[in-house]
Image (cartoon, rainbow, N blue to C red; front, side, top):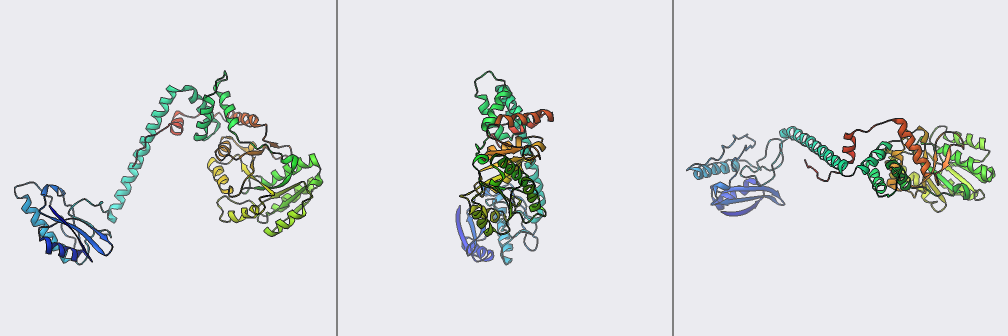
Length: 436
């Protein structure tokens, strides 16, 4: 077989060049668009056994009839040469590249060396096939996960018991795996639940916070409605009880929500501490310079969604005061796991000193909140379990076990049982993937 490559401005000229140099018996092996025109690879003295068994349907603007398939016979070579010659004559008469209806891609009817070109009419069929293959992949992965989980149940029943316990607590699968691995390594007489609880308490990042003793300038940030203003009121009340109300000042930068500044002002009147309102970013620097005589300055910020386009600008004002402002993120314990993860990532644009876990009393499970802070290693400084000021605010330092025990109590009260299908789907270690 003699193969040669031709490059021309268009398909018509390319085929004319092929016919001129290699004759009417040439076979077009492939064609594609290149810089400068069309590239055609043609051959003569070919072996008919190398040809595609079926040429398929060739269409030009005149909707040419389909070619008959190549069959083995004593005249196979003559028939193939005659068909190629006729095809060359037909294509040369067309001014341009032969394409399928509804498609702008070049079609090569002579061989399948190039990727199959899909017309617009074929797209619904392809979409259906892709959906069916995706469904088959998910089914296969579920089956593999079930097999892997059942194998682990037989091999390591202790770890399986710990995983069931942590999953019922509400921990995400990756965090539960990490905690269970630590618990399984403990060599003591404790039962698996005690091991799991102790390992979870150890994994919780907690801030050994001295805020209520030393004071400072503190800003509380977070989305709308997570309890920032109430948490600030609780912090102010606790500090005032220890050091005197003259050592505390409140600052509100929330000029967006209706009634937001009035709420903080109401708390300030009850606590008998001054409150200052800030509407411009530049005013914050000036105000902080006048409050250096206060031992604790608490800044209540406007609630901003973690997806808001202006979040960077909103947090940028505190970045300018990073050396003297401690920033705490208010996290609602009753939020969804994905929401908590997104909130932490969004507000981590500034250096967060820690978080205040709010709405603990309104949560059906603490697993999502614990998973988020463990994954991002964001230490818990305080947790709030009610609306009373200041009784329902607690420093997290020294209370890891208490928080875990409270979460376990919520788990027992919910009486929610996890199915084996859930455990297999979330904890089955599937290392073999099916690709659709």
